[in-house]
Length: 349
Ligand code: KG4
Ligand code: ZN
Image (cartoon, rainbow, N blue to C red; front, top):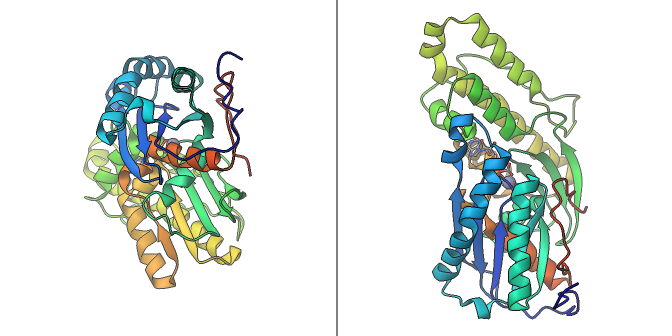
């Protein structure tokens, strides 16, 4: 251990906090005020870098993080109006994610922690997504059910307290975002596929071309999206190029509908079976227009309180990492300067 051991101080005196997120293809930094409000949330997307390859190329991702992290963090500090020497803490995504990308953020946070002599904490990316539900709505109730629907996860949790979550169900194969991205690739749409399907589906009919919905066994809270992908593949194989071009919006709308209706049904079933009255839906897929509409409609007819973060907090961002890190620092957690990125970091439940 060199220099300051951030574990030495167990009581954290709240002050401005910098969050850093580099787990995948967004370089992001955010500053929270002493009382936890978001002062800045800068996101630099690498979509243009990966676009020609139709998906994230890990080597290019880590290189792009190295090139942008300093500028993104400086911009977040400038926009927040906070001086580096005023920072009281740091939060960084420790995992899960792409190893080479995580290392960039973790090393950046370590260097700052050492130079500024301030405590640092490593945060699970999932914990960050879950925390995003309270960024805009700090009074959102606990206990509640949280659906994390992203490129890597489709997980349903019961959040019983500020500290604890129980896993209720998860995908058995592809995550919802992965189903969007792979479906978009089959349809010949650009990367990232989720927003591309979302846009195209708005001009199509969700019922013109039926797709199977996978509920697994009755009352299961697990998901499965791989059969849906196969169904899309078979439908495309049955059509010639002209038919595909003519019906692409209907294909997108039908495919999207099969993903989002299962997400909505299972999330509300989880709420009912857990006996809670609040549901938070977070992660990149929660930016989906149709999903948001169906969730809002169902929540209003069933008197369930819904937290749907604004779009800038749905996809990867550092504000959510800062919020989860702030909570961890307040409960006495600290990372030492030998903390390592962990590509497979599991959520502590
Ligand atoms: O949370 P996120 O930014 O990164 C991960 O933690 O994975 O989620 C990215 C995923 C991608 O699969 C992307 O296609 C999907 O979220 N996504 C969407 C939309 N915006 C992003 N899926 C459907 N509709 C959208 N509007
Ligand atoms: Zn994410």
